[in-house]
Image (cartoon, rainbow, N blue to C red):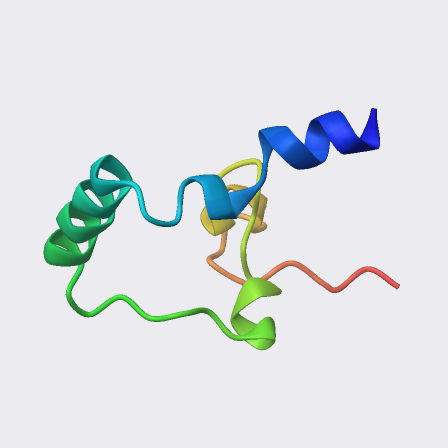
Length: 66
């Protein structure tokens, strides 16, 4: 099973794909100021929705869970 998943998700198969290069170029052109998020920035990402959805209604950040 692991070998099968490895073959399905092997990036090297797609790395030189002209179709993928076109998609990446299109996204890069739409978001010229995009940057990679730091680990600290990723702490603010709400995977299930926007960060405001997880706020308490006053625009304050939710408390960190421990």
